[in-house]
Image (cartoon, rainbow, N blue to C red; front, side):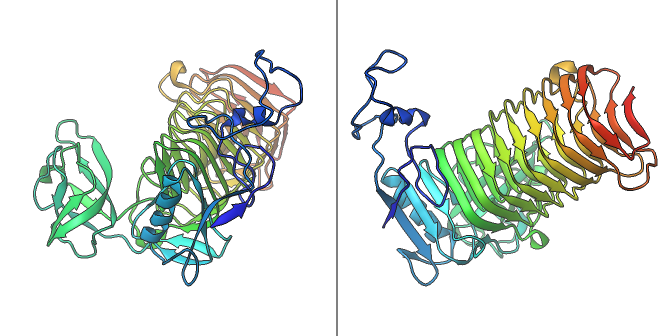
Amino acid sequence: MTQKTNPSRRYFLGLATGWSFGAGLSQLAFADDSKATGEGRPRVSYPRSTSGDKVIEPDWEQRLTVTVGQKQGDLIGTSHQVLQAAVDYVARLGGGTVKVLPGTYTLRGSVHLRSNVRLIGSGDETIFTKPASVSTKLAIDSDWYHQELTLTDAKGFEVGDSVCLQTRNPHTGGQEVLKRTLIARSGNRFKLDRALRENFWTLGDATCSTLFPLVTGEEVEDLAIGNLTLDGNRANNENLNGNYGGCIFLQDVSRVQIRNVTARQNNGDGISWQICHDVTVEDCHSHDHAGLGLHPGSGSQRPVMRNNKLERCQIGIFFCWGVKYGLAEGNTIINIKGQSISIGHRDTDNIVRDNILRNSGEVGILFRPEGGASFCGHRNLIESNTIENSGPGNGVAIDVQGGTEQISLRQNDIRETRDAAERIGIRLGKETKEIKLENNKISGLKYDIVQA
């Protein structure tokens, strides 16, 4: 159960080759022959694996790999349980690769990733999907300290299922959402893997549904996901908000590579990550979702979204809340229902460059108005994008609204191949400030630039 690696020390090198478990500082191990580093310390000339040292690690020729297949492999099966067993095994030994062989794997629960694990399929022939979802109301109240539920109708629920619990908070009126796993059963009564920590009362119309992300991770680090097709079976599943789910959903995770993944047909988001840092999504195809194609979520720092194809979603790329120092580059975003790219609530200091945005249903790139200047997405660069055929007859290619400040729009090619109608190339709201326009090419629209 081993796999050869490429001798390069690049962190998270391509999914088909090796994966370096050390952090970015591991390049010290292969520095030049000079006596000292820039900090004045001696350079590491002969790296050895040392307990607790996560910076310096030898570049091992072989690393642990466990294969999962339907007819052959180290583990045999088609369920989320067999995939989870492989993930947990390699994680227990410090990390490695779970290689999933071709086939369709129908999951009744999420595959939960662990730190230092690579989940790698065999390309388009490795498909994760899910059955039709079921939902029912709770029959009796469960309080925040309980670890069980009683369902009105338990048909379609099984021990081992991942479930989503939703209720209306009786005090605030807001929605509460929790994800749990059913681990024991007596009739309509199920034990959960963890306590509720919220009140799920019948007066709040509390429900339990078999809704879950296909691949997920929470409070882990150093992950890779690649060469997979993730099918959310949208036609037969209820909607799950992208703040809690997606074909891939990550929460409080750092250092992730997602490459060559097809995420399709989810009744929610395609790929969503919340409070996650240094996430790279590259060469992926996210399409036909009810929600967002890519959702760099609240507080996520330094996301990189490069060379992806996003189609027929509600929004293509949604910079959510406080997403900073990110890069969206070389993506093709077409036939989106709303905005191809949306930037807003404190999403500052990002670069959107060299993307193709075509046939946006409402707006090509939108800077959301938010609730005042302190909430807007400042200091973003929009450069060298091709934006074609944006919105209906009064559509806008780039719409900068609210108190948005210090935005650079330069060298973008804004086109309209339909009739000009009332369409606008660039629209600047009356409260915007310091919007720099430089060498943009605008053709085929009735108004090139409109300043409110």
